[in-house]
Length: 403
Image (tube, rainbow, N blue to C red; front, top):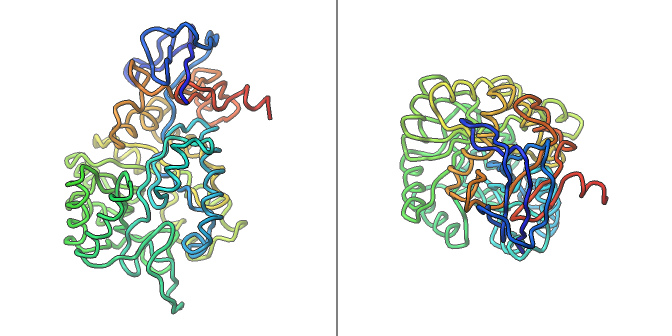
């Protein structure tokens, strides 16, 4: 159900170039409109700052554990129910849209469309695709068990097999396709810098996705892995902590996006030991921890479109807003707002997302102070006076008062 609301006399975000403009924001039947409907709920916006609903472009609804095999093979019923809590919490924080890159499925998407629980708008890839021994393969080197796939990742080798896997994801509603093209922190048996999948395999995935007017997102850390990905058609680079300036310039030339996930490394560094993260992952995290913010700066200097993602697993999911703080430290408040709205909307490919112009989705966050002068309001959940989705209040001070 969509709603109608008018926020009167607020400072409304008009884009990174214009900043905030004092005006009325009218949302009618869930969409931003030029004038309010007669029955609109009226909110006094004087002294408030309104930004578009935030977008997390690297979310994991099904990441219920810090253990890879538990995430993949634990009971799907538990995983799905747990995902409803993760999604509802993200919505309360002001993330009115998420892109789930590794997990999710048509059942969860249908439940969200049916409004069975509060949730951001939801775009999923289904299980990410990994080569044997790649980032999506959760087996350690000394464990001899069979694994073909689970809730978040599937091991698929060979171009023809990958074509079938992509077709099946797109048949069942996937927004995009996620592949693993380098080692990762969470996986146990792969060096973090080495490229994964052959060029032929990546091109097969990209070809299938492109013909269905979709695109491919790739988990990649090193310059070698990023170049291997973008030269074969990948559109979205997830993480990218270890890129250099030459790689960033190539990304800009290929019009590839970077989705940094700064919250994940910081959270694993601070909390990983206490929640049982294994020693292999802790060591890998140390390698990329200090490079994430530098990668954001390198990418922006080269003209790369830089989005925002969180990538939080298990109990770390409540560190989502810490990622905002870290990205502000790297690129400033205005650029971070742009990343979480305009850039992520462009990446997802929905012109109704990421802005508050006429015809946009009526998704907004009303803040208690000017984030350009007091950036902490961007990551302080208590600074959210209202969270609005499709013209309906779904979070903020009034919701907290009712708890």
